[in-house]
Image 1 (cartoon, rainbow, N blue to C red):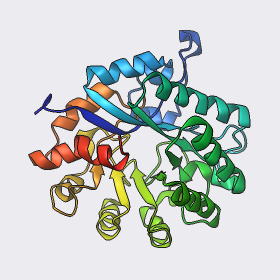
Image 2 (cartoon, helix red, strand yellow; image 1 turned 45 degrees about the horizontal axis):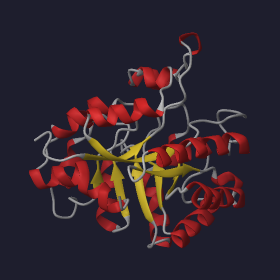
Image 3 (cartoon, rainbow, N blue to C red; image 1 turned 180 degrees about the horizontal axis):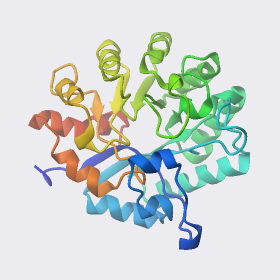
Amino acid sequence: MAGEYRLVDAMTGMPSPPRPQTQARKLDPNIARWFKASSAMTQGATLEDMVAAMDAGDVEFAHVTAAIMGRVSGPAYGVGQDIPDPLFEALCQRAAELMRRYPGRFKASVGLDPGSVRGAVRRLERAVNEYGFTGAYIMPSMVGLPPNHASYFPIYAKCVELGLSIKINVGVPGPMRPTSMQVPMLLDEVLLAFPELTVIGVHLGHPWIGEVIALLQKYPNFYLATSAWAPRHVPREIWDFANTSRGINKVMWATDYPLLSVQRCVREGWEVPLKEDARRRYLRDNALELFKF
């Protein structure tokens, strides 16, 4: 039951710095239809606010994703995000500040744009060597390239070399971006080519839940985080799989704060239809072990 142990968030974002009410962020209308925007999402929040929300929910550790959600320039449908170096550096610095101010409590994945190929590898190396990141993150629908495209392979190889995990979005994206880039079975080739690479599918993979479960069963190096989905809306098939001996170590609780509130995800996380041992694996142990907190 709630309170028996502390939770580990397998994927949280970082809120933007606070902004005045008159400058509140306007969400993508498609996202706004599906999520009730929190104040942290629209008006930003301090790092202290983020930690306070975790403390209130008894969340002990979190794996932060530091990424730009969208293209900075260019058309909505295209290849690459065109993120300038100063913006990338600022994002890395804020995540590094979080890890420095709360030592041992946070680890981080850096968002990358595979469209730049070698440039993405250089940014990954910089994030690891200068800022202490321990993972990578890519949202294929924002990049405009599927995860089995050759542009990703140098990043995968560098992750293996450095011992990093990588998070990759699967399933229909919330923003108005092409779904075809995030069909889960596209990862089959990646997982075959890089058996030493730890891949975490994030945002569930809806509506291809059967395909996601098939990949989880097939590949020992593939995992799933239920980020961006309130636990009570996660399809029953995921819980049925997590309740089995093959699935108990594969699925991880995650908030994707500030998109979803920590409070809601904690409350609903304790209520999911899992056996006692599977619930603990889901809420804590799987992420604790995978990210080596």
